[in-house]
Length: 239
Length: 274
Image (cartoon, rainbow over the protein chains, first blue to last red):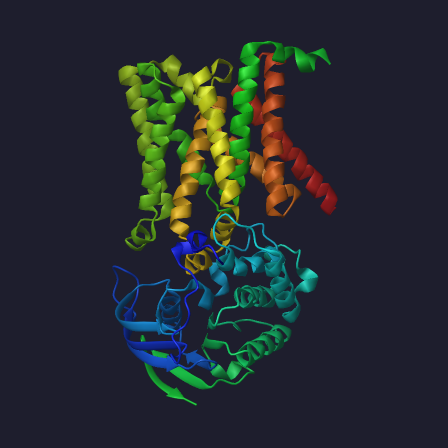
């Protein structure tokens, strides 16, 4: 986007700090404002092009960690750097795939339009997505087997299709860091294969990602490292 | 065809038509957001909370539209503040916040009526008086409809995204809470126009029924907006004609026409689905 005045939040595409990891957390304390912190003293680094799993039970802080890195929750202590930049310095580089429950699936929007929203961060205020955006959306929909249902309202999708759609929007954003919150939760076998293939392709293209999950054994694809989180603290990592 | 054109030979009917169409366009567009963001209760509350402003404006000879608008803007900002994420975490639910503001403002309106107005004035305000819209109010209603069209047209993709996924909107730097506040202000504008047409009690029908009708006919946002506006303006024109020829109250007739359109769409949908 050339005109930064129309970019969301008045922010534009910053160049990453050369040599910086995709993500670096140092002693991070985080949680909702006005409530006790959920994350306590979390530190780790995600190198560029790597795929980490974040494993822990419900309520352990997985979603809080991802939302904090995404800039959706305040950092109340410590430091987070995304490609060497502060959180939120560049909206384009980070995408977050939420759990399905956070979407209003009854809203009258179709699969294609939903995916196109992944390009809005490149378009900004008062402008319509350009032809290039439509091409990116077409490619992403094809890669996730959603082309046939591109005109279907999102409320008519199965759980697996909804999950693929959330990933499609994140892929359409063409971010460099993907934060995926339980992307294979209650997903059918066909969707798992398609999601796994897309994540492999994104990683080969140099994208970095963190995938939160209850159980790393449910994932067919490999991780470069598995981080365990308990009671808001990362307690260990295994390769 | 004389029955169709003769009513518009009267100036008061032409003014009523212009006012009704302005309110119909504003309510038709915003109604889709109200229905699918599950804000029907907000529309109901907004219409009732115009009462204190209307009563004061009526008693003091100010523009009714300006009085209602002032009352509603206070309400919109109050609801936006009380239903913020911070308030939610402190235990104030959205519907509770709206309920407190809505009933409090309506009660204030009734008390003000007893002190400075008359019960005859109150019935006009509650049920609408479209056939005596002042020129100044008509201009304000047209401006309100234009403001709704320009703002929704300019921010459509952001409003749409924030309506189904406020988290993603926040992630990419669109501040969804601010858009929510802006939407409340626009709803306030539409409701203030609607109050002039169908009155305080029936305004939420003008906001919700055409949008619900459109939702029966399509599942796509842009066609739904057009259909909602078409249903609202058809109800206004049909309701005005019927009220003129049958000597019926215009506001209630417009609302009944909107409900008839809804029933027709519902029956059509049922027939189509077999």
